[in-house]
Image (cartoon, rainbow, N blue to C red):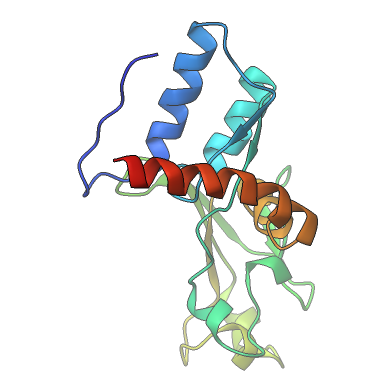
Length: 178
C-alpha cells in the first residue's frame, strides 16, 4: 500500500477513497472498513459499498446547519426527497420548483432545490422553516444524503458505539507512537 501523507490543512476525507482504491488494487479490500470522522464522508460510504462491497463504519461530521441548531426548526430530515422527480417535499406537502445539480468549491457534487416564493409566503409554519422575511426556502444537500443520515443514526446506537470503541483504542495507540 502506498504511504499517504497530508499536511494539516488538507482534509482527510478524500484520503479514505484513496485508501479504498489501494486496498482494492492489492486485493486486500475488507468487508468492513473502520474509519474516523476525518476519513469518513457520504461519498466514501456509498462508493465503497457500490464498488467494493465494503461497509464503512465510523462517525461522520456532525450536522452544523442553522436549522439543526435552532429548537423547533425544520431540518433537512423533515423534507422528503423525490429523487426520480427531482423534487423536495416540505413538511406541509408542498413541492420545490427548482432543482439544480452543481458542485461545492471542493468539487464535490451538491443539489440545491428551491420552493416557490408565493408558496413560502403563505405557509402557516414559515417561521419554523425560513428565517428570511421574504425569500423562499432553499435546501442544499449531497446526492448521498441518505447514506449520511444512516451513518449518523448508526453512531447513536449504543451497540455501534461499543463496536467502534475497538477502533478508537487503536487510534489512540497509534497517536502515542507518533
